[in-house]
Image 1 (cartoon, rainbow, N blue to C red):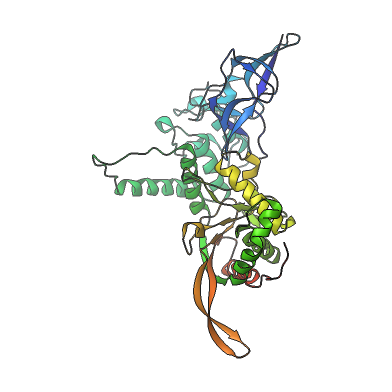
Image 2 (cartoon, rainbow, N blue to C red; image 1 turned 90 degrees about the vertical axis):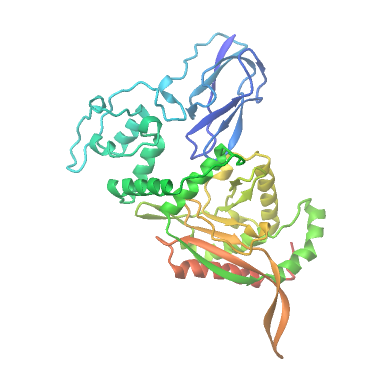
Length: 436
């Protein structure tokens, strides 16, 4: 018999840890190779972890609710073969959701500050508890003990959590002072207290699920980080409506997929991004990162009411037929909770179809670290003035609003407005005789 460790797998370039949601097997259960053993949640998606070997689940090393770093063992499996020593996971590497509050404290060296000289800071001298993870981050970011003490904690008894210190580091890179961050937190806290929630006997209290909490946190972060501005354009999409009506049945018979408007809109967005590549950027402190790939995120509403944004990688390399297949596949697997973490990462520009809910326009919130997002309104029949060789006429046309929100820190009105105008131009000039 041999003992084999089941390792927390790498689930994407940006995924460094995952929370264990549910163990699907218990010690003593027989496991087949590639059979799902547990469900985990990353900051992007919930997914199942399959077994790398067939055998018997001997021991579970990480409990439900634990946050485990990628590459660390989470279970031990007994397989056929020679005995093999298994090293259990280090306790300090398996972290509770409340940021390792119960881990053993160790002094960490923290580089000193302004004069450029380093010194050893003994955290035991502080009356405040800091977890090893928080202290390691402080050391890597050259945050001295005096500076660390100024950070407000949201954890149990005011403890500084991983989220708190990473949030502080981000503001620090953007040049925001400690006092400004604390003032913002204080103001937000005070503002929240000014309007207390009133609960009566007939009210229903609904706890946010994990995904809703994540969405709420990211939306607030985005509004705080980016200076949102929105430009609107109304586009005449009559040619697109007529063309789609003409080819959709043949497309479904040929490819077995429905042809929605989304791939057509994505193609127009991709072409506009090629014309204005400075919209395809990200912000890192005082640096602008111009992205080579055009990866389009598309917001998908889930049956639970939550929202998820799968990403079409290298969207500029597909025609409408190829985009249609990818869009349909991602949307279906998103609703079935079958997406992989990598399929939710790496977006450089996002679209959100608010028209699917009957909305004519919206002011979407940017998906960080992107700098722009486009909302697509409902297509409506409207009377419009058309110019003809024989004079102006009034005709019934299919029209829709495009709402482009962009980060005014790096995208000025000329660029943000020109981009959405160019998308509308591509939609309006769509070729009615185009093959698919």
